[in-house]
Image 1 (cartoon, rainbow, N blue to C red):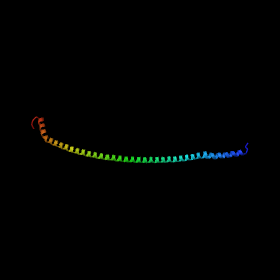
Image 2: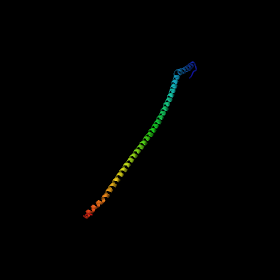
Image 3: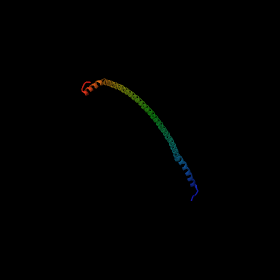
Image 4: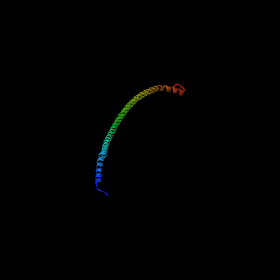
Length: 141
């Protein structure tokens, strides 16, 4: 059974003093450390988010610069290739013109040689015909 006497009031007073002392010595410092830890974690999370956003931004900038460099290299490559093709086509055209010119000169030379040979043969046809007739008939014609 519970009796209300002075010991009960001493226990209540003892409990209140214990609460005050524990609060001052244990609970407040622990809560302060927990609050500081929470604040530190929040700051670290903010820094991590900042680093992530900076890294993402730098990656996007890198990708954009890489795409721009790729576009520039492709355009320069296409330009160089088209220039090379144009130069090649010009050279090929010059070679064709030279070969056509040489071919025309050779055809002219060959046709003049054929005409000269034909004229020489026509001049000799009468002589050949006389010789053949002499040989075939066995007498002079």
